[in-house]
Length: 314
Image 1 (cartoon, rainbow, N blue to C red):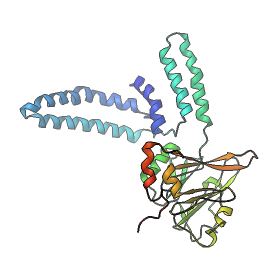
Image 2 (cartoon, one colour; image 1 turned 60 degrees about the vertical axis):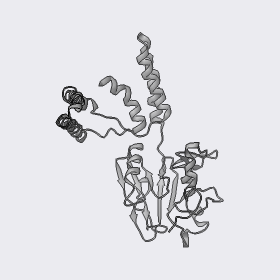
Image 3 (cartoon, one colour; image 1 turned 45 degrees about the horizontal axis):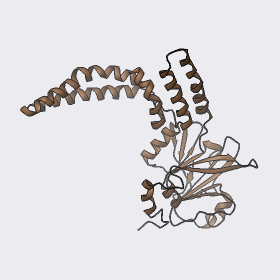
Image 4 (cartoon, rainbow, N blue to C red; image 1 turned 45 degrees about the vertical axis):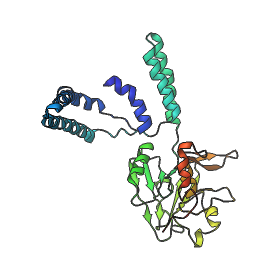
């Protein structure tokens, strides 16, 4: 169990953003039941099928499987969550080299595995969290805090998406939005990343203080807005605009980053990061799950109404 856990734990962390902290305890507690009850009963039940007496044996096998699940549940309730956050491909590659080197070399050369292991540690610590993440339908958004908090724009966010974000960014706390009458004029409840998003049903806004010191204003609209949010005023007041409805256009003459329902439908969910341009000014960039070039297995995405920039049918 120790060897298998050490060999597979790296890739479990890469794909699922968590590790089984007490996996060894679970395996040691469950293996006697598997070895002496579940598997022998499975063989006996299979041999008993031609005689029509397999039912009671399968029932006993099911009961033993239930004991295994009970053990797993008991350990899970007492185990740390094991959340490690998203791992970069470079970190995973360097750690894989270290693991393979340690296994393949049998002389003193095996200690050279420390070098790629140190590289993996350095790369893991260099990763910087994005400031926001947006779902592919554009209607769910979260601000990502360095303090392990996600600040979402919906009082009842999609549970599956939220869980994926929590694991990817090692966020253990979720802050719901603050309901206000006019999010455009009302001040946030604080400054920086501790501020909850403020919404009035169709518009949500937030101010984010990046680690570089840059102040980023973000707005997400689920339907066209009038008044102070119409026309070029959006481009002048915000650094990121998400138009989570179709039809909509993506254009700001001043270079403001705009994401529309069409862009998200074609290129997938997006992470928003702050980069510094040649002049030293902070600039927002979006990294999509799919990207601009659609592969053949992405072709179906072109045919949704949002991808064709068409409004939803009533």
